[in-house]
Length: 194
Image (tube, rainbow, N blue to C red):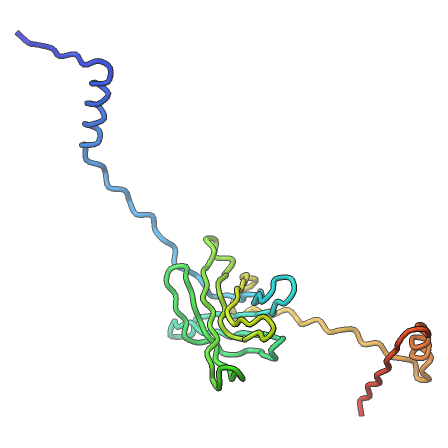
């Protein structure tokens, strides 16, 4: 004689849950992680005071013949163009690199450090810059943000040149501009190529 046991209600639910948790789980395949790509031409700014005091920055990062990261940085407000970048460190999406420059505050050949992280889509890099000391704000560690705009080695767009306005040979335009604000304070500055 065979006995049948019928479980109903919460007992059946408990037994079903216990057997499901005890069943071996099939191993899940690891999702492949794409290698972090940081090479390219990046443009952006060092943000001392966003929308008030931002230092335009261009960073170009590439791989040399040995597969080592190399790069340059331009910061026009500091009269820097094609300054060499060094000491690259990459850990997943985290990246850091430096340039060295003499500093009144920190001495000769001082390191200026970028420590950042790439966005999931690899198009932006943002983090903290340690370097130029801003006297008025009393800080030397501020955020930066860069966006990949081109590939490394691509030709850079020509820098726009400000328009040059020639005054008439006899000076009528200068006289007219000067006399336009007769009641106000005026300053004349003459620039000559000599």
